[in-house]
Length: 53
Image 1 (cartoon, rainbow, N blue to C red):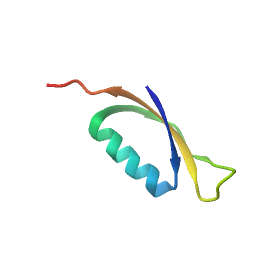
Image 2: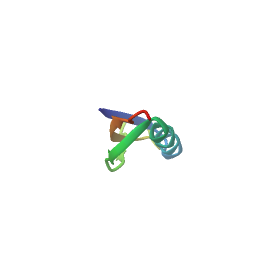
Image 3: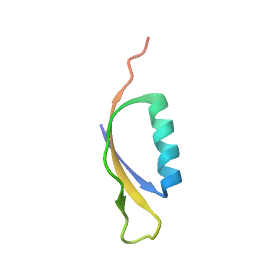
Image 4: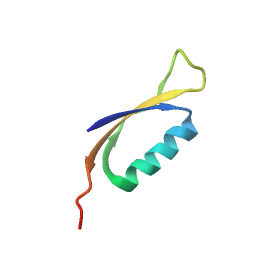
């Protein structure tokens, strides 16, 4: 699954931390500046569900 995260660098870091608790993160793109909102960025995260034990 590919997930797009938008927000400040702090919000994106927090979202990545939370996603890693539920999903296996296999890739994170570089941060792209959001031209319409200053100090906001977007990244794309590639994930897969974690196997339940």
